[in-house]
Image (cartoon, rainbow, N blue to C red; front, side, top):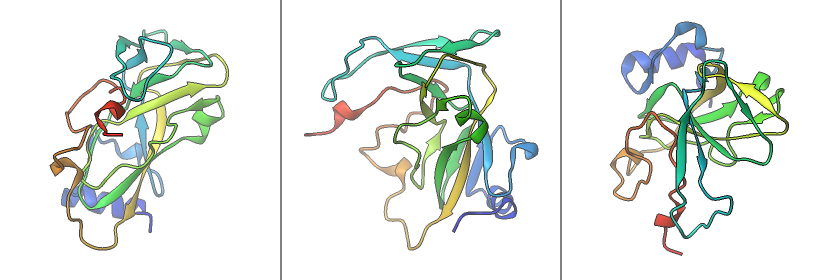
Amino acid sequence: MILSDQLILKEIEAGSIVIEPFKRECLGTNSYDVHLGKHLACYTNRELDAKKHNTIEHFEIPKDGFVLQPNTLYLGVTLEYTETHKHVPFLEGKSSTGRLGIDIHATAGKGDVGFCNTWTLEISATQPVRIYAGMPIGQLIYFVVEGEIETMYNTKNNAKYNNKTTKPVESMMWKNQF
């Protein structure tokens, strides 16, 4: 079951969902619109290695925007910090974003119960497109969880993305054993 606007508001009041900053006008029928933060990052090497720590360079989106180029992976970040203590959050692109040829996540649209952070976005574009800090970039939807949670994400010893940040975070695949 997906939470409706009224249930999202109820869970925010109860503290089981946190969205900062929260703007009532960003609440949809069954989702909440999130916005692009001012920081982007790109990997410093064109060839990436899943077993190595691939470094990134951060930069700020200028006031007059930044043009995304095809065949380049950009890491972005949501302006909003979120916490989810009882529900599974899903981040999806907005149709208006998709119609500009912008994808905001390759595979990481689902969060875990207990995720408390901004969302790193895996941004790509099908053609050159200018983007701006603060623009609507995606929407969060919340699913009800069946059963008790044994270990919340923010309490897991091996959780790789628990450090609170306002900047995009690179892949931590290299921390896995394989």
